[in-house]
Picture (cartoon, rainbow over the protein chains, first blue to last red):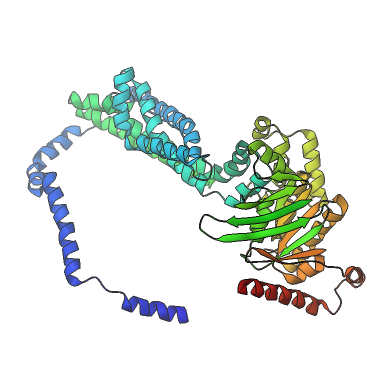
Length: 267
Length: 270
């Protein structure tokens, strides 16, 4: 009772933001928005003026060229293959990085900071940018796509693994250390069983994300169905474009459903 | 024998958990560290197996000073010292048997044990440890399916699997109901008797301490404020006959508690 009464008093005594200060903050926020709108040429008028051209584009997209579908099976499968290997390599890279980036496992703060820095760098560079780099390095095709997904996903997964590992019950780790177990044994018996469900769920989610990402990677020449997409648009074969978009939609939906079901089973 | 000399611990946040602790514990003793929470009992226990590094003073086990060793010898030290915890600290998603086998990790080669392979005699030993705590039939269940008292028994079996010389128990019954508490304390006493393992238990419950301890060390604000044997062996025998402690249990427990409080207050004044 006493504490609730006193907290009420504190709230009353707390100085409120002055109306003037509020107005100033509001003005600042609005200012930033207007400034950004100017910077991005945001303009409703242009959108309305462009409306006929947009409609023209949509009309040319229809009807889809369904006879193309059989030819799309191979690039779709390639996209799935890119996602599979990209995710798998990412998992292999990010397990050691994730362990070292977990404060409760890292052997030394310097190692922890280094691992965190590497993961941040990998995350900061998007799949598309990695795609451009690897296309430049190893040429066009699905292989640079695999590498692009592997590196960027390793950054994401490593960070999530580290968070999962840091949430492990410290008592269990202490108990295993108290038995005289080696650090590796502590990881295998204490950490792995505790993070396994989350680990599987994260990987499935990443695989599903990578299928979506792999459809885009073709735009920079890194293989898969995205390559067909950009080609059809460059050749103004818009009915082909529609078929490709439909194919992507179906593939992604199926992968999402499958991954969601599997994740539900794990948790 | 465990010998503490001038042991102090100040945590990085400035909390002084131990202050000039001098104590000797003989092999095969059953000692209860008694004190309120935050008194420094856990820190003192954790200094024995190197989970906490003291800031000052030294500890000797069987005449060998500990504290300055590398990882390898620290692991060798830890395997002679079993420990059980208030929150049991089992690997909840592993089977009971795997949890007990964790006590064998320090004896197993790192690589084969990381592939979840244990020699047959280790599995046999783990099963016999489980049998001793009466949980043999639960060996293949997941640890988190067991009740609190059962989980603490698995904790004891894990410590026994280390074949330790010393058993540390940090508030082993604080999360348990009175019946499970008694049976856990009796198991610890039995291990102390049969295996001649030194047992050091931290408790905050005076009644339990009076009932089971041979020697009570009172701890307050990180200092040893009382150290005395409990010599009412006759009473313990009476208890075996009547199943309950005779009438003076109230006065005995309360008296001891008051004594610690008094010593505590005195040390604060000084």
